[in-house]
Each structure stands twice: as C-alpha cells, then as structure tokens.
Image (cartoon, rainbow, N blue to C red; front, side, top):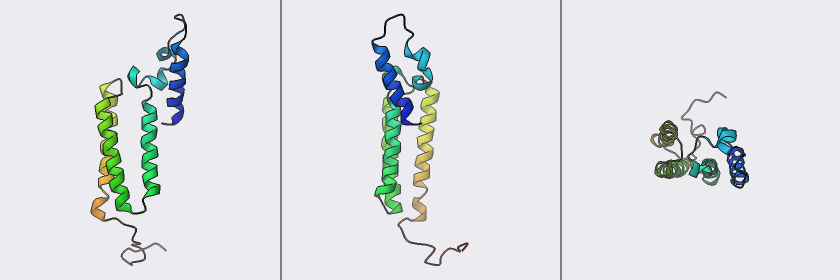
Length: 132
C-alpha cells in the first residue's frame, strides 16, 4: 500500500460530500480505494502508512540490533492493539488477514531474540565461515 490511495480516498470523500444527489456516490465509483474499510475509517490507509514510517524510523534511529527488535516488537504490538480495538475493515475476513499479518511480523521480530543482538561483528570474531 502507498499513501496515494489513502490521500485519493480522502480527496474523493471531500469532493463528493457536497455533490448533488444525482451524482453517483464514491463507493460505486472508487470502491477499489475505500471499499475495504468501514465508512468511518476511510482514512485507515494513513495509519498503515504511519506504521511503515515508524518501523523504518526504528531501523534508522537505533544501531543495536536487540534494541531495534524490542522497539519493533513494541510498536507492532501497539499497532495490533489499535487494529483490534478499532476494527476498521468492512469484513471479518479482512480483519483476520490483517491480524494474521501482525502475528507473523511479531513472530519475525521475536525470533531475533534467541540469537543475541548487538552490533558485534561476528565475521571479524572468526565464529562464522565467510565466503570471501
């Protein structure tokens, strides 16, 4: 997903809010962009974009791999809780798919903990065979 569908959906809602009654409403025309969400949450793409920005910022802000994993895990848990509380999708199938996505991302972030962390150079320590 990108910001374009979310921004387009917001612009479409504003433009059609004052449209005369004989003009087809946005779901019939622009359902591709806003059809996945309940009417109240047409802006949910902006939240998903913010989630991606936060995860990218964590990767750039923290140098330590373990700290990145903890911060990523906490931010993903926060977004999961918001998703479960708000339930923005129009169907339960889409709700379940998004929840499953968060679950997989949380497993991925949590899987880094058994392997330690930090920025130690394992190649320089001679613990790993390098191909070069």
